[in-house]
Structure formats: structure tokens, C-alpha cells
Image (cartoon, rainbow, N blue to C red; front, side, top):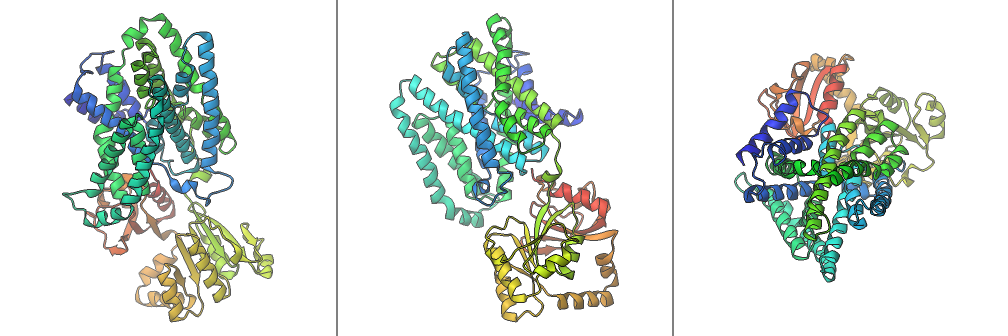
Length: 595
């Protein structure tokens, strides 16, 4: 156990030292496990019950965290019609399932592997844990292509899980228990409903010594895993449902960080290292039929994912589509329990099982390496906030033209035909809309209502806020106190030109240096919210780029903090800083990358 923990510590250090960025940490852990296990020095006792328990718990937590990665907002209608990750994933997986069944039939016809159904289940699996780890390290998990690959991997884990449960029940003589699996899903729904409201209260009463959110997470895991085993389903299906329940409870970023730290920091490395340690390459290489089967299985794993590549080609660049499709060929998590079930049912020999395992490991090594080598972030995938400006006039057009095009994707609409004819040549994104109040979908991060009519601006701003836009700004030339109070209550920001001009004049008189910062075109005042978990927990003075900017204020939980060198940053902090344009671009991109 000490050796495994030591390797879990040393592996990422080695990888960082030798710049092995193209190999996921999980794959490196499997390789080290092979060296330490029965195929290598045999220093790790694979029959050790404690190690086996920690390995099993590792895969359960891995699948739990995988369930927590699903973005349920993707299933809402508020999506880009051109790139819908749910649709892309469904089309991809349907093709994968069809190809997998065909390949299973081919193997049975050739006499290489007789059980067509088992082979089909194995070929359609996707290693969700490895895929998530790779996407996180590439920092594209929140992008359209990242979510498409993720959802394809989710289907490649859930559907084979259900298939494995059905396969095991039928071949194990327990087909009559299949209906009991419904109880597992009912239990998940009941737990979600039961803990939805109490969870908000838990967050208020939790303390450093209680960590109720983490205790609840493990309670969900063990309840659903126990029910899964009792009804004859695979325990990892229960773990996956527990992750989905936890996600729907809307845990805070701090809770997610703690669960990720516990999983990837301790339990999950046991699973990957022990997987490699248990693999017996010596017996595999002495069996000619198994050696013949190995390259065929590796090829089948990749060929079965061709439909994913073809589907991605319709929506993404050729390079990224190929990279994403090859990444879905990685498979290990579901293959291992599938082979264990098949061994118990005597549906597969030990040598065949090792051949499938080694083929799966090869895909886990090759897939992420090829993905990291091929994938290149497309301009449309880079973080940009989508801004909609209503109203075309001298003021709004000037604002649209001055917004940083690397940070914002700006669209303008107007219901004034004359204004449209005047400004359409100056603003390419300007569109005419006869009735802006008829708009129902607002797929934007920021909406600014800046027309010439205060009442119209007011109505449009309320419409945008009701549609779920996070930031809505409304321009009011002559705002009344009651209206300002109402807009503030609705969390709508009010801009008044008169107040802005008087504030600017006062700043010029009282604080000329501050006014100079506001108007300086070389060193501009910026505002950025930290989304990158890599910078959480770090002190300001430890940031590698801190010498290039001056941090003025930090906003946390609605309160402004005075920054110091020892101030520890948190995800969600809003930083106000000044710096040169080129430095500000780089720093904003680093801080806002979601991983």
C-alpha cells in the first residue's frame, strides 16, 4: 500500500519533470502498475484485500465524479441550433452501437470470439474517466466539442452498463430480477427530491470539522451502490446515478473541489495502478491465439468509433473531429467489470480476458496521445461572452465597436428602421427586428438595453432577465426612484448617462490619476471572474504574472476585498486590475479557462 501511494505521488511529478503532457495521468498510472505487478517486478500483491478494496472504491468514486460532470443545462432548449452537443452525442453513439454489433458478429463468424453480445457491449464502451481527465487537462470540458465528446462518453458508459446488467442477469439465470433495476432509478429520484431543500440548509450549518456536504456525497454513493448490488445491477451503475443526483443538488464549487481532491488525490490512483498490476502479460505473450486476437481487438476498438468521427466532421474542424473520435476509442472502466462478470459466468477464458484488457489499455495510451497531438482549439471555441445590444444610436454603436473582440461576441438589434439604415454599414452584426418584445430566447451572457425610449428599454430588459440572462444592463435617461428600486430588485443594472458624466467629471477633479486609468488606451482597467481551478488556493503574490498587472479590488460573495500579497484566491472571485492590453488578454484567458 505504501508503494502504491508513493507511486501515486511520484507519477505526476515525473510527468511534469519530463514534460509528458500528451499522456493522461491515468494511463501513466496503469503503465507503472504493469511494471510493479505480476507482469513486471511483482512488488505489488494483487491478492491483498485492502488494496482490492481501495481499488474498488477508487472506480466507484471515479464513476461518481463522472456522473457529476454531466451538464444538465445542455438538455434545455436554450442551445445553439447549429451545435447541439446532445444531438451530436446521440447520433455518434447510435452509430457506435451499430458498428459494435457488426464487429461482434464478424468476430463470431471468424471464430475468434464466440459471444457476439458480450463483444458488442465491450466495443461500444468508452472510458469516461480517461476522457474526462483528458478533456480537463486540455481545458475544453465546457466547450461545444468538449461537451459533445463528454456526452458521447457518458452514453458509452451508461448504455453498456445497462447492457452488462441485462447480460449478467440473463446468463446468470436471474432474468426475472431485471425489473428490480427500476428500483435503483426510483431510489435515485427519491434521494434527489428528499435532499434538494435540506442540502441548502446543510451548506449553512457545515463546519470545518463536519463537512456535511462531503458526508452527504458518500452517503449517496453507498446507498445507491448498495441498492444496485441488491437488485442485481453493477455497483458502478449506482455510483454513476449517485453522481448525477449530487450534480442536480447543485453543489458549490468548493464542494466539487473537495470531492475531486478526495477522488483524484487518493482513491482513483489505486484503481488505475492496480488495474495495471493485475494484468498478466507473461501468460498473454505465450499464447499464440491470444496474440493473434490482440491487434484485431485494438483495431476493432478504434473502428467501432468511426461513426463518432463522421458525426463530429459535420460540426467541427477535420482535425478536431478526428481527434475527438479517436479519444472516444479509449476504453477501460467498463471493460474491466464486464470481463469480471464474463469470467464468473465462464463466458470468456483468462487469456481472452487479458487480451481484451491489454487492448483496452493500448487504446487508453494511444487515444489520448493522438488527441492531445491533433486537437487545436478553434477560434469559436475560445472563451467569449455573447453580448446583445438593443438600440442603434451614436452611444450604443460606439460601445459595440470598442468592446474587445477577443473577449466579446457582439450582436446588435434595433426596431428603428431609420437607425438601421444609418448604422448597418458600420456594424456588421446589426439586425432589424420589427418587434423586439416578441423575442423569447436570449442565448446571451450579457444583454444591454440601450434604445432611445426609456419605457422600451425597461420592457426589453425585464424580458431578457425573465428569459434567464445572467447580466442585464438597461439605459435610463430620466430614471424614477421607484423604477430604479424595481430594477435593482430584479438584479438589472441601471446606466444613466447624466450620472456617468458627472461621476467622470468628479473623478477628473478629485482623482485625476484614476480618470487617467479609465481613459488610457495602453493600460486599461479590466474586470475578470476566476473560473480556472488551478488558481484557486493560491496567494496573489505567487501568481506567475502578478508583476504584469496591478490588482485594485477583489469582489467575493458580493463584498469588496482590499487585495494583499497574501490574499488567497477562490473560484468565483471577481478581480479588477490594470495592465497592458496584450498582458490583460493573456491573463484573462488563463483565469477564465474552465477545467
